[in-house]
Image (tube, rainbow, N blue to C red; front, side, top):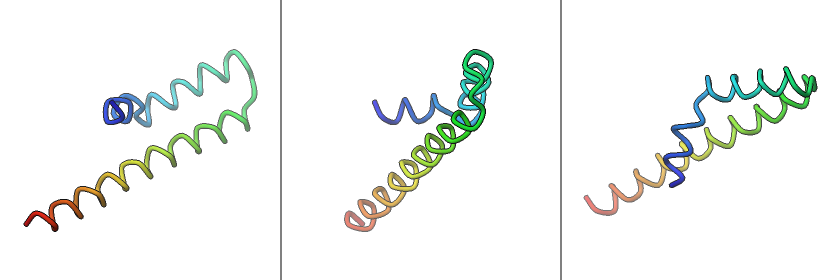
Length: 61
């Protein structure tokens, strides 16, 4: 389930979401901050997944 949400929340989708929020809320800095957090979190998840798969592969092989 987590993998699906990671692929759905791509960089373009996050930018689109932010633009939508900017249009309605007009809180520029908050939106950029939140988007940065979301992108960092997704990057960390991908990195962690890669490290985890590397560990699993090295353990098995």
